[in-house]
Image 1 (cartoon, rainbow, N blue to C red):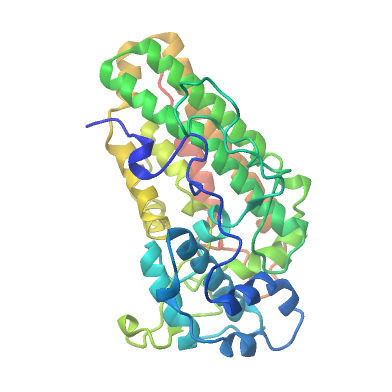
Image 2: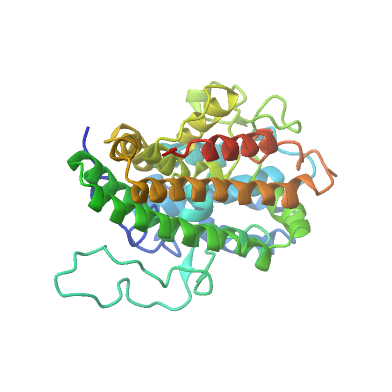
Length: 403
């Protein structure tokens, strides 16, 4: 066992799981695809969006220059794919080869299935309104990437890509981006806490747990801001319908056929829709704090979500789970200060889940189910979310360490 090191996974305390450089605003190639996606809210006002997508020139995968452009390509194709699916009252049971093949091939390049997932919806979908330096001035000997880039925060960020547009859609996603940036300090604290646990250094562990607690508090405070500009009615009827997947969706009982994708052999595919469960933050904290979930349908769902998370982020989660046990060392020390700090981190993680559960009730469960493309009994990932979120919360809160 060895402590995690953020640099081994392309991560920094300044940005966490956000990309190391700001996402591209446009591709250098496939410009017609880029333009259609960028102006998607306008094209939604027409009656021929599917025909416009059908008329696009072939997507040139070989023209993608680098990782940043590939990530933007996945976002562009994913948004167009979801728009193609949900723009009409009757969903598309077959995606045309022009869309399906590049979605599959670019998905292979980024290591995710051909459907809109959290990485494209949030991590790669923002820009700063005011382009300030990445790092605030610090000590001359301060290592690169060790300070928090406070300019990536609500109030100074906006979306690169929308479905319908409007502040509710923007705010819903931007809250997640802000949380991801603040989580970077928690990820560094995981590394520091594991290092301290391995060295059996209780004082260093207290410092690391304090940093973890503070970062989690910041994340929680940002999540509390969701109602400021995201109305539950607008979310349910104007934001949520476009991020549903094909699995456990009553509108698509036979899944979706990806025309021209030989690997699928013409068979309907069942992919999960975009969901916050595809963020690596909570699984990483679970792993580091030794939070265990019962091996039931919930646990299977959480593990399945890793197929939709960028591979390097999954490797980080696994490294957190396999690293030196912070929980074991805290229990061994029997120091009240250390145990209190550890328990504070566990409680904040439970609080985060509790607030998420509250929002699920307000933004989804309380809204009337009016159409089959927007079922209120399951989440966008295709699960009975109220049961699962409540279980997440209770299991977490039950795993503090008693003196």
